[in-house]
Length: 239
Image 1 (spheres, rainbow, N blue to C red):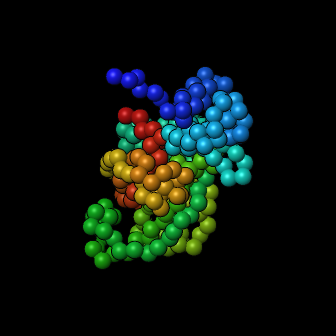
Image 2 (tube, one colour):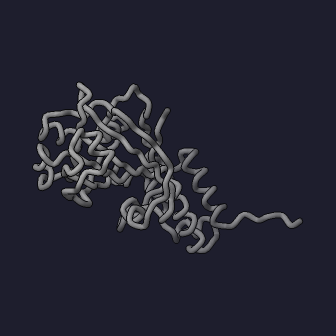
Image 3 (cartoon, rainbow, N blue to C red):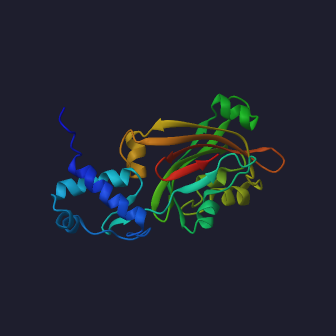
């Protein structure tokens, strides 16, 4: 049987990954351009481009339009089973020495689904405020945030600026209730839709971690409902 030959792009993938793992390229450092890498490894730019794309999809590199390709920051870790404590993404980033960002995608008034109405203890015909954002760490997309709140009491959030701010802090300021614990949470693996892939700078059908979670205040009263989609290569839930 003929020996299987590793494709060139995978060899380059392994070379660059090894350099990142060794610390030859530091987090947030810009790597050489495609022509420079092509010359360094003696391969075509097409081969280098394929290797870079695979490294970006795997979370080792991130492309910034007009600036180049940079080494990603380490995985963001969140302790999923930390006694039900709700920790904001902004705080998680700050503890990791990263700058949290947020970009609003959509805001709507929507009817409550059965599980949402039950969580908020509302009538079946109640209306919710739906907020969708993409959260970033040092400019790299980390997850798609989908948050639902009772419209009554939080209608101010329909027009308030929510760019690059902590939603937990804003919810507390507007409604007077701070999300400090989770009353339930489930995690499952899903595939990115084309829309999610575009927003999160990944490829359609790439793996995502779907977190379905209810946030409550210190008294156990419901505050908000989250349906979040995390890029698996950039975010890690620690059990």
